[in-house]
Amino acid sequence: MYRLIIGLLFSGLVYAHQMTPAYPELKLATVEGILKASVTIFNKRADVSYYEVGVFDKDFKPIPFVTSYYIKDIPYEKTAEIDVYILDKNKDRAVYVCSSSKLTNVESTGIESRICSKFKK
Image 1 (cartoon, rainbow, N blue to C red):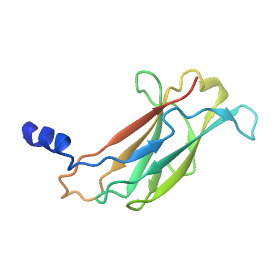
Image 2 (cartoon, rainbow, N blue to C red):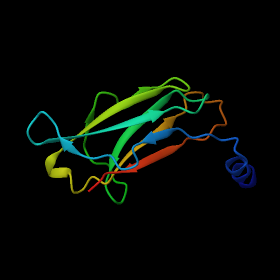
Image 3 (cartoon, one colour):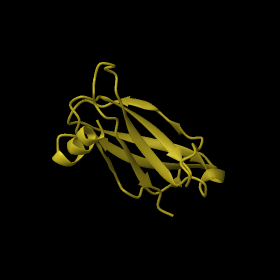
């Protein structure tokens, strides 16, 4: 089983989604004490249309954040811009913003993908 998964990963048959920029910058939002970063997710996977967004510390423990879409429907070969808001007091703890594919077909043998960008410090 592991050989099959490794073979698929290196054969080019498994496509992940993309998230840019690699180093998003936390900037002051319009509300005092709140910082905002924007990322763009491009769906390169025909078998997935939902992606979950999360913010994490250096040990990948969740950091509280707000966004319009925690789980966003992104059709195949389309992009979506996601704005992430965190409290100014959490800016030093927040290290990564990640997007994870959400498999909705329970009969699928697909592989979930997770892509992370590191906040520019």
